[in-house]
Amino acid sequence: MASVALSLVKHVRQHFTLHSTKTSKRRRYGTCIRFLHNSRCPLRKKDCFSFIQLPVLSPTPRRRRRFRTMFSDSVLVSDLIAEGVSGGVALSLLKLWEHTARRGVFDQKLNRKLVHITVGLAFMLCWPMFSSGRQGALFAALIPAVNIIKMLLTGLGILKDDATVLSMTRYGDYRELLKGPLYYAATITLASAVYWRTSPIAIAAVCNMCAGDGMADIVGRRFGDQKLPYNQNKSVNGSIAMASFGFLASLGIMMYYASFGFMEESVKLVIGFLVVSVATALVESHPFSTELDDNLTVPLTAVLVGSFVF
Figure 1 (cartoon, helix red, strand yellow):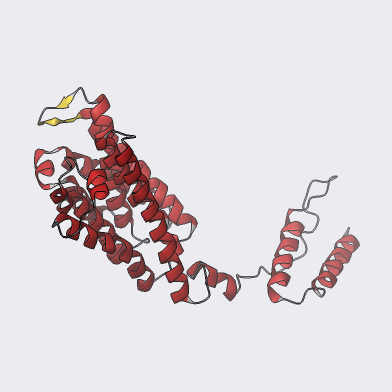
Figure 2: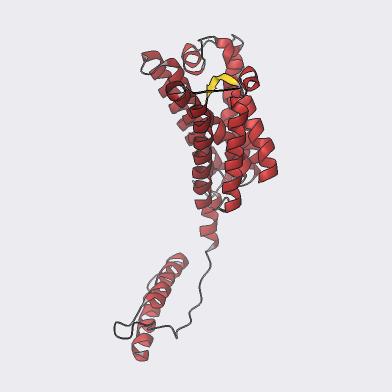
């Protein structure tokens, strides 16, 4: 058996010499290591080559660079491409919901909440395309920052955009853009520029505002017969939906970012997300939250509570 193993190792090393690039050698070398370690004797059912001690190679610098920049070796070029792709995704979603609003595909309130849920979460899914560090965060923040300018110009009556007004407001009044939609864009901008993708506070703030608050309204309008004793405009099922969907969205984004190595999954994070989601649901159900605006009170609550639990 030892002679068979030694001949196999000799064959593998000869096979390496046929490939000139260092990357291919490392890849094939790692494959052979896994083969030797996982091979078992069919008769004795034990490791056949356990006596062979081969070093484990660390990732090459070229491979590590791919995690820092996705599209190009140049950080600036990669961020510019990520900016274009992310902006295209956000703009496509906005145009889609503007089109459904003009056609009357959905009820206006439902259409507005679909914008509310999808745009922010889809934008968060694009964050891994940007480079690590402050530059990537600022490039990502530029996209919702442009939307802030658009909300201000349209809400002040300087820019006329009937499709945006129809898809993002409750009553079709362009001045409504200076409240909820403006707070929405400001929250995503600050989450990108200040906290970024390594912070659970950014995840909690955006997910509870988008998925939590959005689903609370949808569920509450359809299954909200049982009203809260302290707020007849809110329902028990709506508050439960907000806490549940905000929590589930936070967990989903956490696992998504963890797959890229931006954070580590832990029980502490899961408990923290649950606490923040329950807290934001309680604040959202209070009458003063409606008077101010849910898009303002929910992310503020997530930031304040998150700073203690994370």
